[in-house]
Image 1 (cartoon, rainbow, N blue to C red):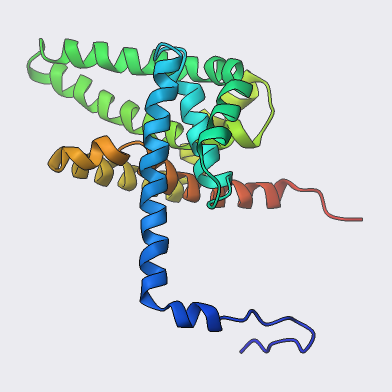
Image 2: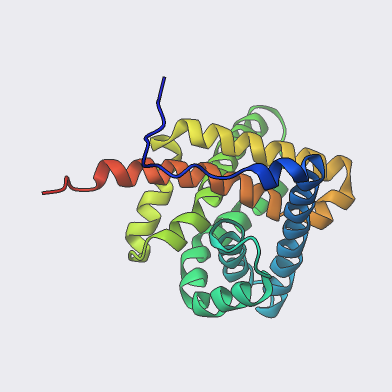
Length: 222
């Protein structure tokens, strides 16, 4: 059992005890409100760039606000600051994902015209490629925010990330599947927080994975 060190300050939780369950409810409400706010900001950020040139800066900025920002601060100014500062880099690094999404959409349209073994083979390929792309998408904002590497190095890491972290990949797929199902069953929730919730949950898992990678790759002190 771990003992408290005598010189280690002990946090006073008496105020929290007095607040009780009402304080917990308020914290939950603040978290939910922030998710909705970031979801709205994501939509505005995408529209500000004409969708094509706005979605990736918005994706990056939303992740920064959710996981790196001050929870007590309004997300409006931090979001637009990150959106502007990373606009060019986000679009350069997001272009391959846009191409992949267009290719998957085209293949899905082709799939409706096929029958028999060809349809089954293409369907299996689409599922595998789609799942791999979804995991890369989950990694994308955290990697782009954390590392200032060349596009080639960044994408080499992103393409290998599902294989190098299968646990994180599986967790991200579960989160995306559940969020997609909830949004399908309750469309209003999808409209209010359909991007922010998976972005936040997947981002937490990816951050833990990246922290472990950084610890292993960090040279020993001295």
